Length: 200
Image 1 (cartoon, one colour):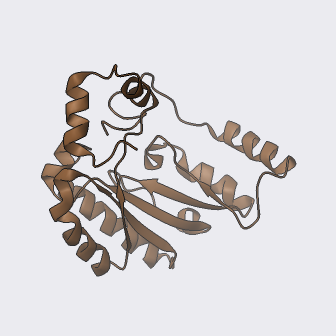
Image 2 (image 1 turned 120 degrees about the vertical axis):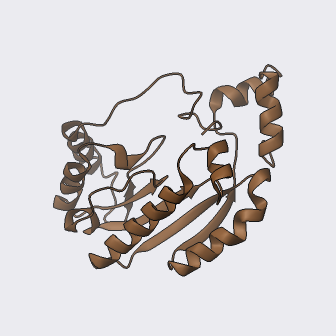
């Protein structure tokens, strides 16, 4: 995404969280009473969780502790969905920049039809595993995808997925600072003004 800190303008690349570090972090949070038994751990932030090569091992760690978890995904990949995956899953949020190949070419660069197939596969396979938890499409509203909102809403209804349109925002600290200081690259500023509704 051109508007996210971890998108195409990222300054550095991160790595995958290894299972041992993940487990130690959970130990520290548990010891310091930072985890609530009714809380949900979000397995995402500035990255795509379904790319993690040891995702099932992370889920085993959470399941052993009976901790609930959720995912936010761009649905570019379909993970291995089994009882380990669904055991304590609370939600899956599908992040979509529109409902056409044109919108995907502009933001994510993925094959739109493949993303739709992936969403259907994830939802159907989770339900076959007995999951009745929440699935939501977070539809990022841009100036160029307004006419696609209702088609996405119809798709969500057909698959019994909650539909949640949200305004896309500038979510890159360096670009926000440059904008405030009137130092943002002109071409990027023009692109932002053509795509986003608000800079707030």
